[in-house]
Amino acid sequence: MSHPSTAPLKVGIIGGGFMARIHAQAARAAGADVVSVLSSRPERSVRAAADLGIAHAAATLDELLARVDVVHVCSPNATHAGHARAVLEAGKHVVCEKPLAIAPEEASALAELATRAGVTATVPFIYRFHPMARQARHEAAGGGIGRLLTVRGNYLQDWMLQEDDTDWRVDPAAGGPSRAFADVGSHLVDLLEFIAGEQIVRINARLGIAHPTRRGQPVDTEDAAVCLVEMEGGAIGSLMVSQVNAGRKNALSLELGGTSGSVAFDQEHPDELWLGGRAGSTTLARDAPSLVDDAARLSVVPAGHPMGYLDAFNAFVLDTYAAIAGGAPAGLPTFADGLRAAILTSAVLESSRSNSWVDVSTVSDRADVQHIL
Ligand code: SOE
Image (cartoon, rainbow, N blue to C red; front, side, top):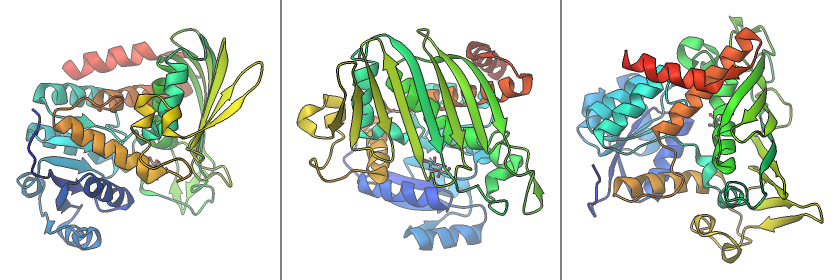
């Protein structure tokens, strides 16, 4: 069901925090009208409406759904699946923050529901939308580096370093059974598979907890995860995810090594791409005429005008709305990708519990079967 109307899309936001603000500004940048917001209690909806400049403060989800074409779900993790399901059952388009669902079975059911509903359903794996990430995909998935041999990836932050740092995600009832990996490891594995053009097939993970309690609350979910991975085509690699690395703020980086070259992308320096060669290496600066079409289309300001996080986020929402209008933009992360992240997160937890390698296919097969039962 597309929305080829020339009238601006009517958007509803569920949630009133940091991500709700990011989503609201991206929706407006894409030309939509953000008309309604729902938070956890009516008085919080009123406060979110005032904070975000939204006319209607919804007291119930039905009130919001009656007013909108598309809903952005920006509430705590454990509520994502329930909200996304209600939006899909109302026949509306949906953007659901990651993780799509706490369990792969739920994510699988939501991906199938979205397909059956015939609506656009996306997940903001927004780092795909840096132009040089698209150029990296051209170099790796496009064969420019030859057969993939090794992968290395990190996603390092430090906002949970201190014992008195805490967050709603520390409570598994709100955040789910995985914390750091579900929150940012999901971005890392999504970007790795997107740039590589192939999937992780086996994973061996260990989890770390920095502090047994935070402000007196027991901690049962990970602050850090390290993973060995095997890729579909035989490449091997290592991934590190941490929210307790002092001095690292949002250090998402990937390096892929192939038989004829390497490529490395660093999200904190998104306007360049390192291209490694045996006979010499170079750093490619973002400049649309030198980029592949899919990268050039995202390069919305000339070289020398740094692009960043909000540009990538805005490009993701613009492409989501293009899909709602009936288009087919390349590389749009849908609920199928949200399911993929849930499967990999579950594989990481399973591997850490069993202290062994896990075939990712066993987790995805189980998810498909169990959501049908
Ligand atoms: C916190 O870790 C966070 O805001 C994540 O939730 C986002 O997905 C990431 O893009 C930045 O860090």
